[in-house]
Image (tube, rainbow, N blue to C red):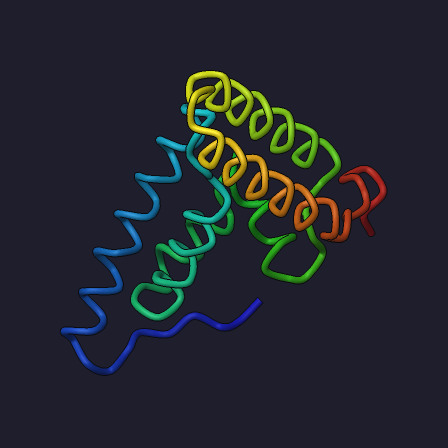
Length: 136
């Protein structure tokens, strides 16, 4: 992981800090709603805190629920097998429900299915870190 620091320009620092909290709130909403991503917003939140608040960056990367998966991703270790299953299951349930809602809009269904397929390939392409009981 990179070393956090505070940007020297206060306008940029406070803007990044505010954006970090907005992305964190969106991540929490995404953890509750299956149609919104969680991981993307957590990564964006961490990137904003990295350059605006070392304190909140450490808080986020050491968080009881989000810390380990976030650290794994930021360190290049990828996404855990359990998270991959949860991500893919919720993605496809939400997409298939949406496809049936937009049944008359074939182009919309095609776009949604294409995006879901590409996201699935990306998720599966990510490395899987060793389980926590196998870590050194």
